[in-house]
Image (tube, rainbow, N blue to C red; front, side, top):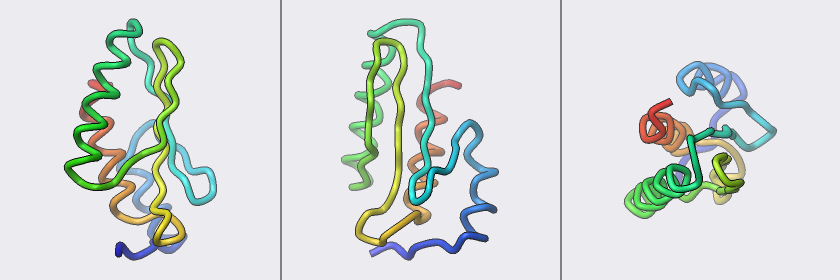
Amino acid sequence: MANKLSSNEIAAKMSSVLGWSRNGDLIERTFVFPDFIASMRFVNQMAAEAERTQHHPDILIKYNKVTLGYSTHDAGGLTLKDFDGAISANAASGC
């Protein structure tokens, strides 16, 4: 199991995930794409990455907008796995 980060560690890690915000024990970001097909392409990339790492984000799809949320539920909060997921999402999005 991954170790839950302290508030100070979380604050330091937030600078490595541009565009993401913290909402309690969750980090989240909404990505905007040109159309629905591009949104779904991104979601499929994230699904493959989530399976590879065995760490799955919450995903909300609204046509050309995809919101991802990461939290490590079995650790009871945010861990390095969440920030790794956010970094991967930023890279996959092209944003």
